[in-house]
Amino acid sequence: MKREPYLTDLSNEQWALTEPRITAWKQIRVARSTTGDFGCCDLRQIANANFYQNQTGCKRSEDLSLVVTDTQSVRAATGVPKATTGLDVNKKMSGRKRGLAVDVLGLVIGVAVLAASAHDNAASTALLDQATDRCGNRLEEASADHSG
Image (cartoon, rainbow, N blue to C red; front, side, top):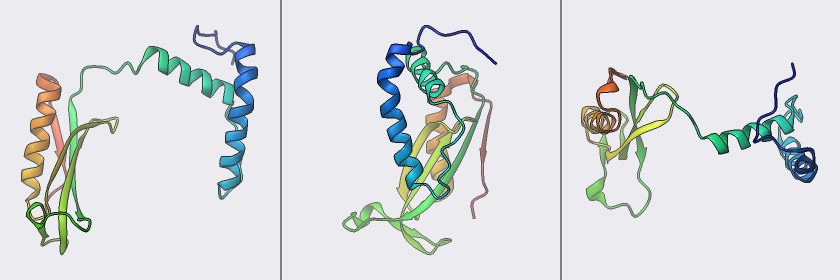
């Protein structure tokens, strides 16, 4: 199916300059892949899509209504002050707890970092506060896994 060109599409002259670099990059990626499959995508169309996205920006609807939150305990790196870490008794792990709030596209809305000993409710409260600040009255629902 042929599409009408966009103003941001590469001209034939621009593609002639760009194509060797993109093809060389792709060949390096394919050589490192486990399958060796070059793929079936038209690299020029991918480049055109990137230029279009770069020019027009990401036009997202402002009717964000759902936020998903989750936390994960991770071991603290060597040298992290003990005052900022704690023991997650459920995971039997000393470290920190990181939490994210994301929208339905998986884009980050909020971030919280707490001691691993903090309850998930503390992280969720911080994340929901950030989501409310960012989304305002559009936020209708929040989803989280059960803590335990």
